[in-house]
Image (cartoon, rainbow, N blue to C red; front, top):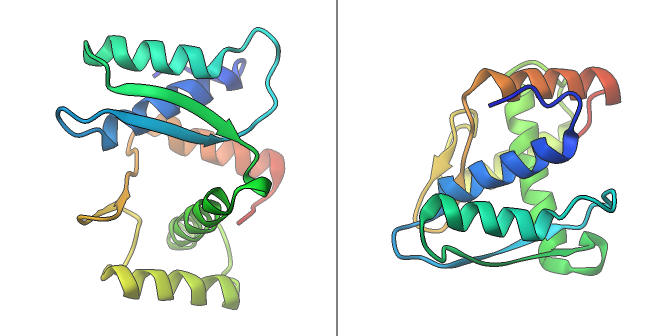
Length: 153
């Protein structure tokens, strides 16, 4: 992948496409529900992601893309919580966070329920799929994000 320092919207789109590709099964048609992020007028996230994903798969694989404000949708709130716990486990294992007692407690509860020791290398069972991109560009993107914003989650 390219260096996205100058275009975060392209990075958002490319990472979305990569994640969709990681979860798509043969002959499956999916709908993407994403968290709403305010974007510049020229960004056509929903249209472009659907177009490029279907072109890459040479079929209708992505039926639609819809973004919701996660604060108005319980399902997205829960998804944010799960993603936050998984991300925290990865950051903790890499030494990027010191370890909040309550966050670690939630992470350990989730791992116990799923039957895994760590999300560092990803995890997959019949109901749950954690995809971890092992390419260098994402670790550099994470480092830049951590340095610019401070560590979160």
